Image 1 (cartoon, rainbow, N blue to C red):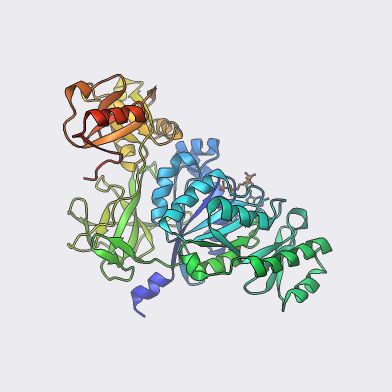
Image 2: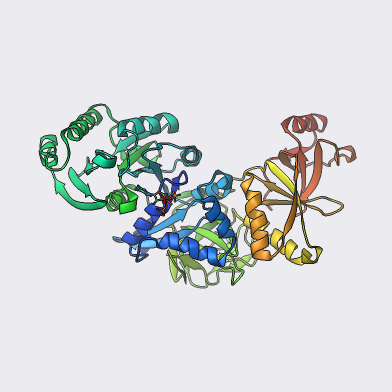
Length: 526
Ligand code: G4P
């Protein structure tokens, strides 16, 4: 086996998706603890508040109880190299999340046993389905009373449209929760007083029943055996191929807060989840074990460390091996670039990367050369992995700095945050007024907050009543259409013409009147 194959096979790159409060932070933390990446529980949360002390906009995140940034965490566990990509749990930040999901090989979906499939889970899940990403389900908070497992499977199948197969099954729940039974290894894992109190191998259901008599009440045991038999007879048979294709989700139960069920979950997950696989590009299929280096930028984040004012482009490696100081080429510009000092992210630190393989995420210092969706190639035969999904803004507002003296910082902030993809920025042609476009309302709030916290600029904002933006990709906009009561022509940050319409009807009318003009929902890449 080549060094490349060995390294690629031991990599697992995944994201955890959930509705806020289902337990994503807690599960992530327990995994990091298992991998020795952090030493004490509470570190991830503590880190949240430590960050908030240095970067004020995190305060907004805390106030709203949401996570607005995605981060990357890498650790080793039992020979595996694990990359966890965090996804923001709020729907307004879906764009960032969607792009992050393009950079993973599998997804862990957490459901709160009491809540089942919630709105945000549904949205995120759809993206995974569209991409055919394998999905693993962790049903959390079994120490609390919730929905019956069979009801949850039905919900997963009906609402999400994916088959489910439980790998383990809960023994009671809430006050009667006694642990889980592993249907694959025939092992009981006992839970008592918020702890894992041991495991036991059983022969068959008779034996299982007998062993449980010491700990669980008869009704719980009867229900368990009945459910298990029903699943054996009428449940979906586990099928690895269906899991790999994203048509079946293995389901696990646990209580993340006490780490109960987390090690077992991780072990099964690491065995079943795919390692980095091949990706399509303009040069055909790129295999992760190809020697030629390649990757794509899926996220750019400014001011990760406010004291340095740096900007990081997150690169998902798709093939080859990163070596220190290597020379690469950017697909969009054809320019040669030295990858200077890329970094890898650990739970509580960043470190310079010595070497990295397909599946790894490295952070590149970005002096303003990268754009989201860029492909980075290891040699002159440049190819491209294609565009990442973009979403048309539906909310618009005009902004200006409250204090005209702050103009310089204002321009800098607007430019940097636009490049990061935090918001769309347009200008009116004559007066050069700034117009912002957002996919969700909350994006405005975060933008205002960050402009103040990171650039010291207080903004005045007026909401505009446009709902649709279209890039003009072909044709000249006629003079009489330049400014009407239902549309406005603006320029994006690289001077491409964009028309804002009040609604879909106005857009349609414009198209009918101007058939020689091509309009696009997405900005053209250049
Ligand atoms: P999120 O990142 O998905 O938003 O969820 P997070 O892990 O922050 O968990 C949300 C709340 O649920 C937290 O409580 C957390 O302690 C609790 N929780 C997580 N896993 C379990 C579990 O297995 N059982 C029970 N009973 N609770 C769980 P909180 O009160 O909001 O925060 P905290 O004060 O406990 O930190």
